Amino acid sequence: MITVEKTPTGIAELDRLLNGGVPKGSATLIAGGPGTGKTITAAQFLYNGATVYNEKGLLVSFNESAQIFKRFMLSLGWDFERLEKEGKIKILDFISIKKMSLDVLLDMILEESRSFGAKRMVVDSITALTIAFTERVEVRATISLMQKLLRRLDCTSFLIAETPWGEDKLGSGIEEFVADGIIKLETLPVRGELRRRLMILKMRGTSHDMKFYQYVISERDGIVITPYPEVV
Ligand SMILES: Nc1ncnc2c1ncn2[C@@H]1O[C@H](COP(=O)(O)OP(=O)(O)OP(=O)(O)O)[C@@H](O)[C@H]1O
Ligand SMILES: [Mg+2]
Image (spheres, rainbow, N blue to C red):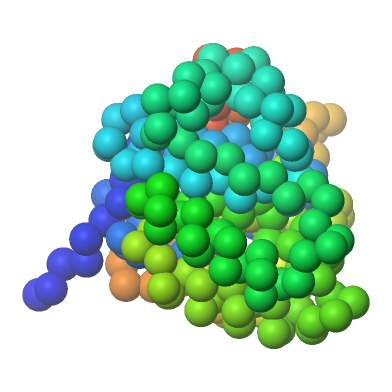
């Protein structure tokens, strides 16, 4: 049996559910509603890569400026400013990208990632990226270009997909099929309070857990997944 090489996320329990991590070089969609912890999960993947696994990480942000992101992360005790200075993390924010064509943007990401030597990449979010370009290029074309870019990179990536509140769908209906894996994050009302839960919907090339797991977002540790599945 050929075993697939894994990239551990470093998030306790998640790596166990993934039998060691996500396949090296794969692209995983982190899909979820507002405030479900998508950015924190992806940031943890980069932070652990840089601090534990000696893998450089690139964050491509269409949602938050690098400065706001770093301040947010510091509230969780993760000093991305220091990692940036140490050359372990690179942040590219494209808050105003209106003047750039999609081809130029993707080439720039490719070039930055290669010259930096990134082994992990996060795009926050694929939804914001497609919205920014749908006027000129269709969503399908954007995602297929993104997929081509990812294949040319020597990176394991997390792509964030934003699901509107109260909707059951994940992304636009295209990236779900293009991505190698999908991790879904949810907030659900249970007896007068919101509970967070996570599940792995798909992960090409590896077996994985299929149950629902509750998680919390902790001030010190970020995403903390309970070791036992939900009892239904
Ligand atoms: N310092 C903190 N300590 C504990 N929990 C926090 C902290 N900061 C944020 N949170 C929790 O994390 C949530 C936001 O997480 P995150 O930004 O990763 O979500 P998101 O899914 O990326 O949201 P969006 O769709 O708005 O981008 C907040 O709604 C809050 O519940
Ligand atoms: Mg976010």
